[in-house]
Image (cartoon, rainbow, N blue to C red; front, side, top):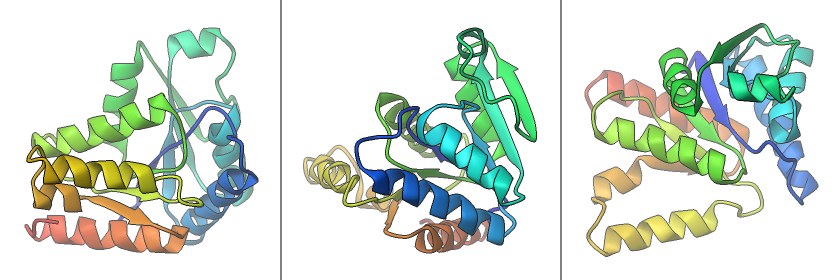
Length: 190
């Protein structure tokens, strides 16, 4: 079961209020299931929203942020725990170490970088932690379709493609992640 979930999301709120609404719903569902949150440690955009909402719900929030972002005064200072690291690579490694799985809310290139690195590290055997796209108003449909194209073009196996879970609700995302984590522990390829 997922006890600590890394949440990848934008440092901007995005153009659709549904992005922030889904972010709030996700962390409320996490708090209700007693799932701690690991995230990038920022106070801006969806990152700030998820941290504030999780804290308000009584959940634990572990932020991991590079020193350069602390220096730019974008660190969230009210977290359960904030770890400062030297760079983005160390941030991703620390977040991976701390979590049991990953979920991606809408975001930009940083969110994509984090998601693809988690997936690549899984493919290389560095971890066996599951990851899921939380699809807000079809935000991730284009990426899912592109990954189908990558598979159909012979650059991604069907088994690897199936690892990229996609959910429409927070409850569905957490259920899929729990099932994938359970299967991984039992040696079942997901």
